[in-house]
Length: 114
Length: 117
Image 1 (cartoon, rainbow over the protein chains, first blue to last red):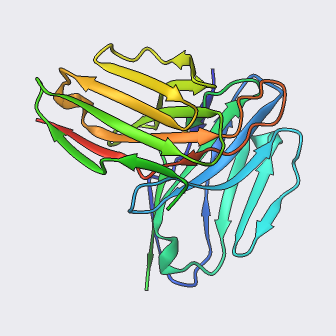
Image 2 (image 1 turned 90 degrees about the vertical axis):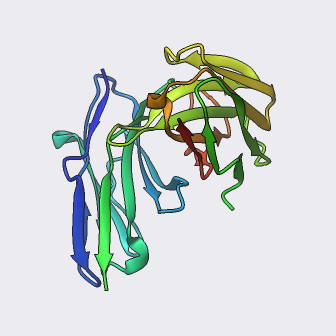
């Protein structure tokens, strides 16, 4: 069975702080895909990143970076120098190769205060 | 504007009403999905359509009836709902359901906030 755990329900930081959102996943498949989505108050889920299980290279996109570690089944997301506009609920998700089922974690609500 | 448009944004309906949610995408995607987001629960996949054919029904009660007339439009027909069906219903699309290849990121709509009274 597949499972995604986001242990942090809510995080509150002050603007310009760095913050890391944790994601731990469980799967028996060797081929799988990991995602991060952002859900601002408006409701839509905004795609941030997709990573396949064969690519453990960490990725940086502006202030966002992702640390994929298969040894610990983790796919953590770091926001550097956070901004108020980063306030949202962030979801980590997993799908196995060949499946259309995207399994989501419960999400982490990030509040960035000015 | 995300590329996936859902209407209405908000809907309040009685338990005996019949209503429909609409989802539209002009991204050229071939797969469309309905997800349910309830308070304090993970996002739940409800239905998947690939090239207008339903490929997944995740044990959804029959009071939810999906319809996909073409690859650009997806409906969710609602009848005799229960208060526990109140949730945010999200539609999503993706370029393909390629079972052999890489999975693409999904594009989500803004959702319909449904309240059943």
